[in-house]
Image (cartoon, helix red, strand yellow):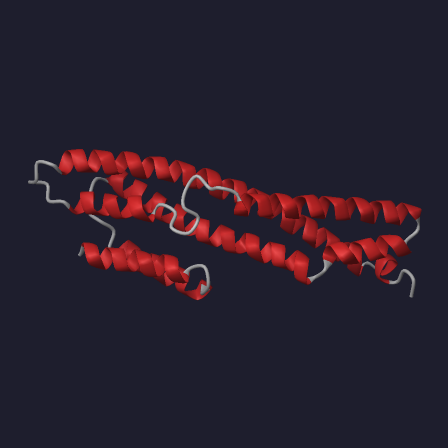
Length: 196
């Protein structure tokens, strides 16, 4: 049973970053095999599993937001539009470009800096340890100590994962907002028509 659980976790984390359609079924398969135990342990387990998946999803979202800026050449286009614009519009476009650049750099920094948890595996190792401890038969005398240590390790990992995910989610939200504002400004008739 533990081997099956480990295989399901590995599949969920392997496919979640590249195939969005498989993320939900993988999570559903894991829910069907949630280890037995006290409600608070099952809640902790589920939260840590969700946080681990959130790491993958948020990192993928950050990479997409950064690619949106790069592929759309938003910084270059804002600079060119500011060069063609009158003084007031040029100042506005320059300020928008500066904000977009700052948000892009900040998002990239959060994505690539040293994370408090493994950025590819998240809490998967403490999850496996917790899974094993929860599945240990109640009759075994070591179950209580194994479960206590596994619970502490998983709780610590969950707190770190939530902190990292929240920081990246906020940085990506700011980048996406700046990118959307840049796209709107570049599509506006007064900007798009300058110099033509």
